[in-house]
Image 1: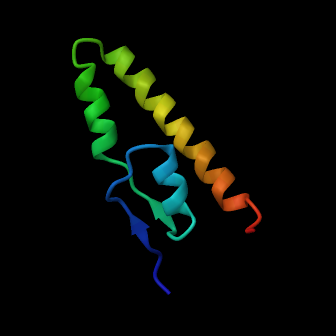
Image 2: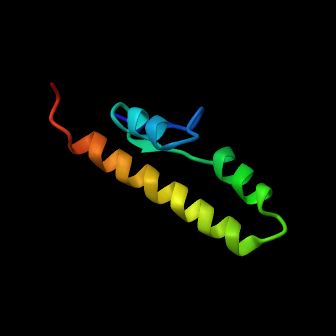
Image 3: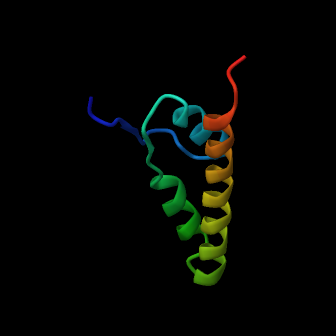
Length: 70
């Protein structure tokens, strides 16, 4: 009866979509921290990349959870 969140191995849209089919929540942490760290010299670029990654994950999860099972 409790909601289940999964947060291990979620590094891209494909993984987020797969997990969203079986969990109530998808937790993303280290994948975003790595992207922020990669742009430590340009925080604006880091924010843009994080926004792009999250938008891609959101689209993939929406598609995965609204798709009709085969």
